Length: 596
Image (tube, rainbow, N blue to C red; front, side):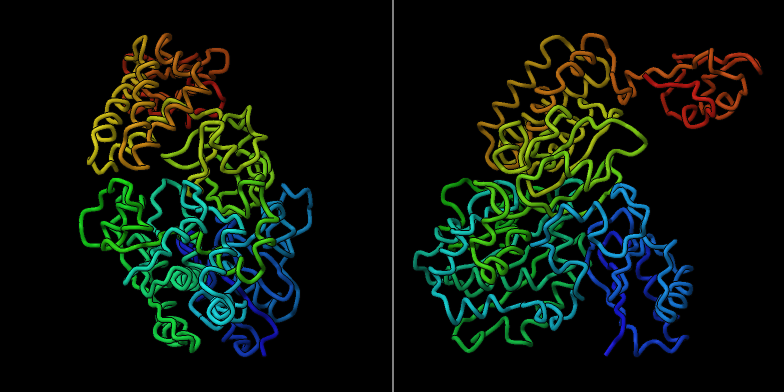
């Protein structure tokens, strides 16, 4: 029996920050102090607060150590684990929570206080490579309940009653999708879409890294509900930790009889295989993903027929994303009413977001549907760094839209986001401040879409390229009257005629930024000016003669010799030579240089 457990984040974020080195130092120090039989070290999945990694939590106290380094481990072991005195100066102190006391539990932080962890319930809590820890948290109990107490239709009815909608983007009711695949057929499949390709998105990756058995159990439940005996998880190869833990989980589940033949002695057979994607964004579209699993180039197929009728290898197929599956076992165990009690009338349950961009608390969050955007930005996210003003939030990645500061009190759910020109998407949420140019942001996302288009249909292949050409001209100071109208016309045509969801939603970032930030487009076109000073071709860096001390440091640092002047007199910038690199901005100690 251990008297203390030390949980260390081993998700991608903390791993990249050196959590493996922290573990090595901890194990070595515990051995040196003779504590290996008293203190257990557990490598977990993502805790969520990625900005503070590596994270280490000591139980039973729940002390939350952040940004831990190997050099700090000896003191933590000596003082906390040996003498029972938490090292308070190393424990995270959350200024947003309005307290000067160290965080002695996750709930002491503003980041976690407004969250409700359902899909992420085991992430940062269990060892994802140990099936026994998953089982100890009621793992595979839902599968056993379905196989021994429920008919397939009763399982589908529970999912329908819960109001669970697909968390991959479109928000289609999960129970209805399963119902469509119940028609008799000699062979059926269950597929998990883990091809997470949105810039800044890491929701599915974190679930797979922190709680892989939740996905396996849900896929087996879906297989029982529709009459399938085989499943595939399509995960991008750029997720090596997720792939490793999925492989371990599948092997363990087979060994324990949770996958394979005659599961729970009921005669139900179900097994799962992994398929690795090469990183094509279009393969996140379900029909393109199925085509890729079949060994062909990932291109979308016309619909109908839908995958539930004719999917993988031409057989009826249910395909859901990782987060959707992560909710299923909890719905079975706790009942559909429990799940439906969270969220809003048409958007039940919780939603996981990857919170990034100009925000203090970058990380993974899970909130009840209907939570105001302001709560996510100001409370959970900790506000905007450096005293800057919140300008907009991009939801839905390249397929979504920008929500302006004027709509910061919008409740976040499927219908509200669509109504204001954005969408839920898979769950990326990028925050922008006053220094972001919205025309440039639209250009960034469209560049991504153009590069990732499979090229199968003309509207996406040519239409998005034409939109990008116009945006590029505008950001280079070559915009013309009528360009905004052309972008709107092209965007609406592409939305109406593109073959798949990638093309149909590609214009969203452009159309939403025109809708809410048209004045910025007009400034670029009519005044040849970027209000945010972000577009290099339109930016102008100047020196305020009143503030300049004539120290000459900016002149010495300028890589192109664009700055000249005399010592102790105001310096000037030759605009014909200036390349807007910003070196002088970073160099000046007196705030005399500005970019407009």
